[in-house]
Length: 202
Image (cartoon, rainbow, N blue to C red; front, side, top):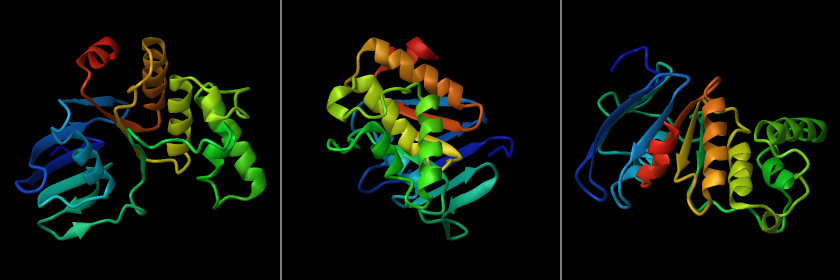
C-alpha cells in the first residue's frame, strides 16, 4: 500500500458476507465503488467506518492505521473521523432541515450550533430552506441535508451508500457536483449499483 494514498483498504473474509477487496484513493478524489445489490459494497463502507470487523484486513486513512488484523489494531467507530450517509438513513420527519443538522451538534453551544448550521446549509446550497420539513423538500434536497449532517464532525473521509437512490437526474447532478466540491478538504467514497450514474459524473 502506498503511503501517498489518503485511503488504503484491504479486506478479506469468507464467512457471513464474503469479501476480497483492495482499494486506494488519493486525497481530493471521489472514488466510486460499483457493483450489483448484495455484492458487499455496504459491508466495505461499514468496515471502513469501524461498524464491523473483517476477518482479515487493513484500513489506513491519511497514513493512520484504523484497522490492522495482523497487528491487532482496531479503532472504534467514535474515534474514526468518518461521515457516513446510509442508504436508508432517513431524516426526522417532524424536524426542520436545520434541526436535523443541529441534532448532530449537541456538543456545541447554542451560538455555535446556529453559525455552524448556517455554514453547512450554505455549503450544500440550501440557504433559505432551513425551516422546511423533510416532506417539503425534494429528494435531492433531502440528500443534501443528510450530507450536511454527516459533515458536522469534520470527517477525514465521507462514505456514501447509494447517495442518489430515489432522486431524479437533476438531483443526481447537484449531489455529485457537491461531492466533487467537497474533495478540496475530504476524501469521498461512493458506492452504487447504477453504472449510468457513475459514468455520467466521473
